[in-house]
Length: 151
Image (cartoon, rainbow, N blue to C red; front, side, top):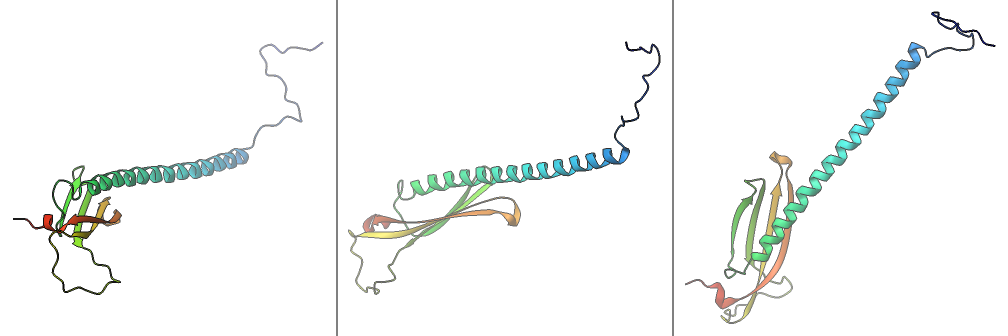
């Protein structure tokens, strides 16, 4: 039979003991260190996801701009710029005649019906301040030389 103690605390056995204050403090310190590492890695992952989303959006804007070059109006040497999303993404588009460095320069006049190649360079920048990111695209486009002359 076992005796019950009514209204009194059960006597402690000599082999039972609780955690010491030092053990509790060490456990909390280890927990805090683990949470710090975990939150740090989550913060880094969130930054990478944000950068990836921004870079993907910049690539979509760049592709859209490159698809429009020479479609609505004939290609002509020059430079233009603009922005998307109220200045969050800034772009600069340059068009220049392209010459093959392997070929010697020709003094022949350009045939107005001949096809010409233009180098199209597009830079899209995003980010705040000097730590912005940049995407640079270069392409060659052909155009009829007679179309390039604007009356």
